Every structure is written in structure tokens, then in C-alpha cells.
Length: 80
Image 1 (spheres, helix red, strand yellow):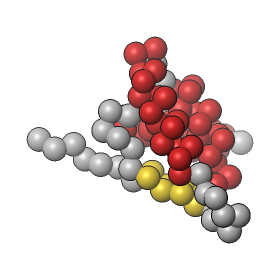
Image 2 (cartoon, rainbow, N blue to C red; image 1 turned 135 degrees about the horizontal axis):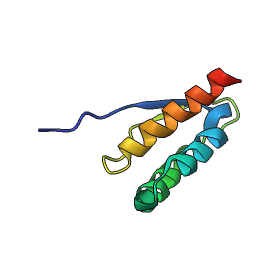
Image 3 (cartoon, rainbow, N blue to C red; image 1 turned 180 degrees about the vertical axis):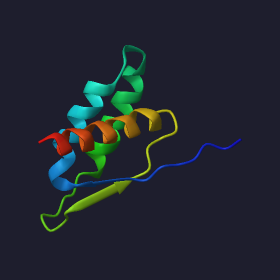
Image 4 (cartoon, rainbow, N blue to C red; image 1 turned 120 degrees about the vertical axis):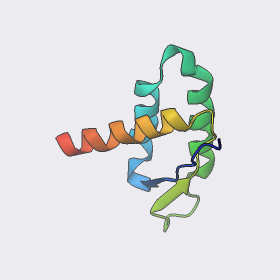
């Protein structure tokens, strides 16, 4: 059965907080997935100041971590 692919959408202002959420949510056994996800996010950072959003589909191996980090980021935002 094929895995469902998830689109992650972030504002440029959320990028540093998302990277922190990836690190906070990664379990010891997810080190490679975290590194891959952080590299993917870094490669997508906008080069133009006018860009305000990025979106990406995480690799299948890092998708669970990517979704947990997004949930963590949004939950923390609601608490502030």
C-alpha cells in the first residue's frame, strides 16, 4: 500500500522555529531523518526577499518527523 504524501507549508517567518521543532521532536533513532529534513528545508529557503511562503513534500523516511514538527510548531504558536 502506498504511503500518503503530505505537503508542508510554512511562512518564511516560521522557518527558524520549524527547524527548532524538528530538532526538539526528533528521537534518538531519527537522527538521519532529522538531518535530511533540515537539509531539505535549508535548500528551500527563499533567495528573494519578496517570497513569503515555502512548501515541500518531505521524503517518505522523514515525513513522520516533519508532520510532528509542524504540529509542535503550530501548537506552540497557539500557546503564545
